[in-house]
Image 1 (cartoon, rainbow, N blue to C red):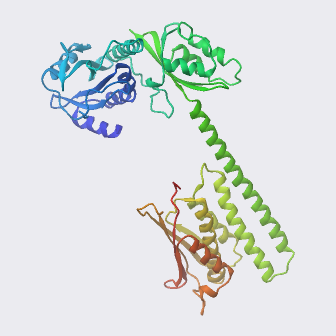
Image 2: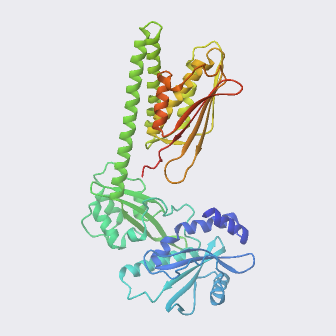
Image 3: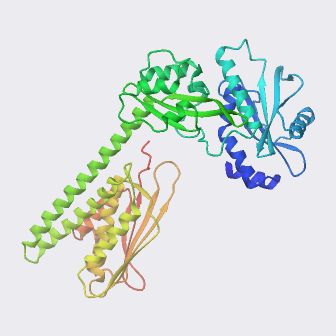
Length: 495
């Protein structure tokens, strides 16, 4: 969205890159102003043609909206255009002479200059539905007073600051979550009901209004070993920053917006959100992920132990069928261990299979005992796969690569090539992998029949069927063997 708006502003206005960035910063914050104002906000810029065009629009989450249809793209005309021109010329906050009627609603409209240094680069209009207003409560009066302070800061070029964190982060507090108005000394002048509930959730039993917010938090956190180092700055309202506070009874996310006049701090807005349930779910998820990773790590270690025992046993046997069978078992166990090792480093039950395929292919080629050079390469990408698909696919590729090295290239040397293409399919039944393993060796032996071949081929056939696929062996050109198979993958999202 930001890049699209930037392109539009570059194309239709004379704004500089820094001025466009200033507009982006405002748009990252203005939901706060809209909610405190109980009003729609519209951002207007002057085009190269000299007229005013609406480029952004936000509605309040706390009250009745004014514009049911998005007015982005519309041009200001009549009294609204004249209001914008006056606000630009005077560089001041201006209100239209009286409420205007729109669909039987009385609407108050005012224009606010958005400044970048000494220059007005855009205008913000605030549209309040007066018909929906009743005798305002203390909450509404407090919110409107805070909104007026922010509007003055916009006109003075003091808010929002470029370094201020926006409210887009997951779990960030909003106006509806809880609002506290601090004086310059950090004393709570007003706290919304939700804000007081959040503080009481932490374990503070007493009053909040009239108390110093930093002292309140210091009291409830005095037994905590770890305290967010930014908390003191946030609870005093001295910096536009975020902090978290956690006790045994709850967790609260805080965000401070200092209020200034003439560059001097005169107080602050502190937004609070009770994130106790959110933090608990995050902790449970992290614990589950850590447990799953640890399980995969231990399975990998156990499989490596099994492989080592099989390898020791194989060394005690003379060359022959028994030793070859144990060597094959060592390789298969190692392939499964490689997938579990990859899963132990992830955060879910999916893996990036490209690395597994490359490592497995290179490992088989490197340990091949031959006097002729054997190379390998991978073309294409597998992408991310579910763990159960990755296990089967890793074994299939391992068996086919081993066959290519053992029966196709041991005498002649050459290259094993792994081709893969992933085809996305609609309908939610999973993507399809089309895979080919080809060597440029001696080719398929005479009389080869996959159904009556050795254990490795039987394993491959069984695993490909489990992947809801099919496989076939064919001669490669000008010589060698090509094995093609396809596999229908399970969707990454099991839901």
